[in-house]
Image (cartoon, rainbow, N blue to C red; front, side, top):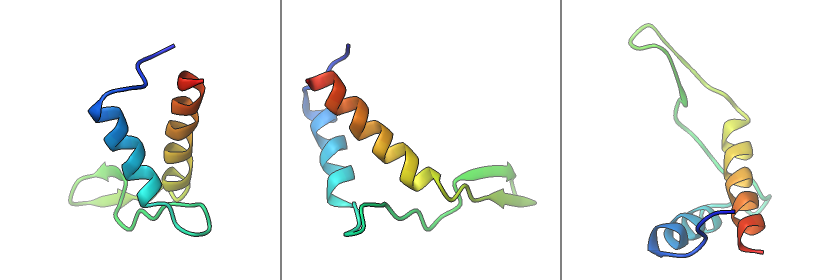
Length: 64
């Protein structure tokens, strides 16, 4: 299904695991959507929860 080994993969997975909060979520204090630069920025509140979990799930499925 995909490459699951190598230093970049290991660093990425370790990064996500190390930054996971005790409640199982991740913090994203900055804006995560551009909107119109210097006019307004967007904050998608679920991005910090959805994408790290998705990445770890894909990693787990690919390495099984």
